Image (cartoon, rainbow, N blue to C red; front, side, top):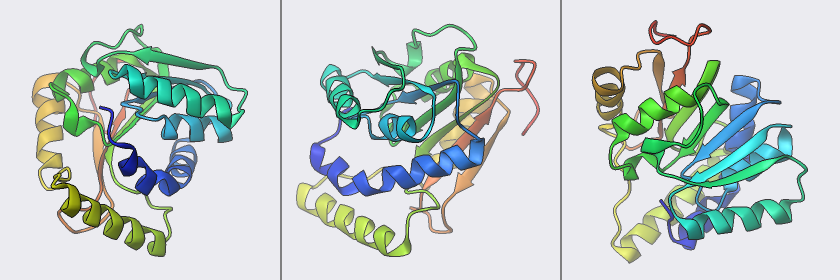
Amino acid sequence: MHRPSVFYSILEPIYPFLVQQFADDYGLNRGIAVDIGTGPGFLGTELAKITNMTVCFVDLNEEALQSAKERFMVSETDNEALFVRADVKALPFEDGFADFVMSRGSIWFWEEPEKGLSEVYRILKPGGVAVIGGGLGRYVPDSMRRRIVAANRDRLIRSGETRPCFKDFSRMIEDALLEKAGVDSFRMISEGEEGDSGKWVEIHKNGDGKRGGLS
């Protein structure tokens, strides 16, 4: 899940905006948050800056986790933090562990997304929420959005890399959640009308902890 540093340097300005959006949308302040596929730890660190949540940074790549730990340490936040090397399809947390789970940009690299999504659902507390996908969020200023999109496009052209395709995201998620993971309490979120605009899935666990019922 660890990506080249140039990728994160382009995206770095968006993380405070995206985390503030999450905090506002889901009323985040206390409890346990899990940042899956954390990479250098931008999301988790920014969340710690504006909430009192315990943040669990999770990545399969040891180098990425070390980078996340270093970033968190220099942020001088006082939140409790855990750094866990794990695969999303076998998370080492008990059932009902987390109040909030977030993951940006990693699901396209999961080998078995249905198992990962099932694990995300399993570790959510009743009443908890997870938001997983990719995009820049609603709070990013238009000028910043245009600059980042252009810079990332140029980077991909120079490197020959391909960007995650958002066009089939809804189909992939619905197949993984409904047919394989057995999670049906979710909704799709799109950042725009274009096929390659940001896409997210918001997963809710019912208050009784049972599966079922579209939120």
